[in-house]
Length: 226
Image (cartoon, rainbow, N blue to C red; front, side, top):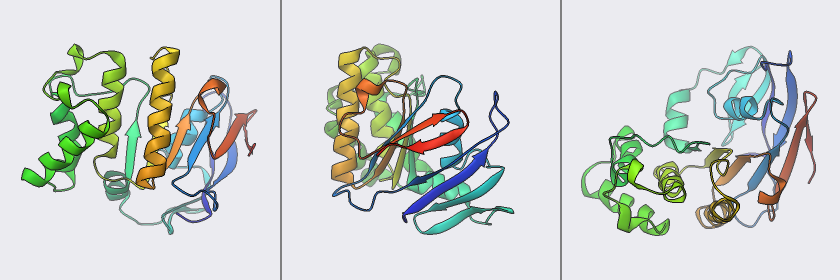
């Protein structure tokens, strides 16, 4: 994705702006696992929205997969929706599964958006649900799944398009400590095995053991710890 891949200055609800640069580690053997820490209201989610190309920075530069997406004078004229659809996966604090679709159908949905249909799509869904160890619940609606199961389906959905970048906003916030740690272990596994960069926004330092890079967002500044 290039060494410097996200530099931006963004408006936040409580502060006039924050600024910072996030860099992709050049030494990780697999995909990078990056933690973004900070107290509530510090702008972590806002930074994630900039990185996911949903919120436009007020200034700065965003480079993704070697392509300049945002410059000082605004978006660089690329198809942002295509990049999000084809190269990014999203995991939310609340699983955000579509309630009237089964687990299988939820994972199938993003594949339909990129034109993958029929047996190829079904095979990919089976592969992902088995990978997430949730295949036996494929035909269950989200309301019939436990919290940890819902989040595993949400992760499977995020992986459907083989994303280069996975963005996770407080993915363990609704889970107990044990389930939260299992979700983080899954994200580590995904980063290593799928060669995907994973950015996790969290306020829980107990969850970031083994991460490649840790950033802190405080007082409007983004600082790189390691």
